[in-house]
Image (cartoon, rainbow, N blue to C red; front, top):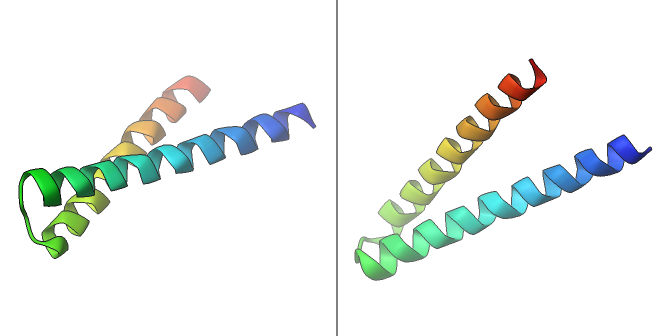
Length: 64
């Protein structure tokens, strides 16, 4: 039971981290770099993809 709760907490934290990265990247791109909204959205989606790839590689290394 404790293992499932830990997995759920990790997924929740990972999801929140991905959303935070996406929103932060979007705000930086649109407000600081003054890019258009479509470019800022695509850049933030790319940032989520990179984050998920890094987490996937780390998870596969840790699980052996």
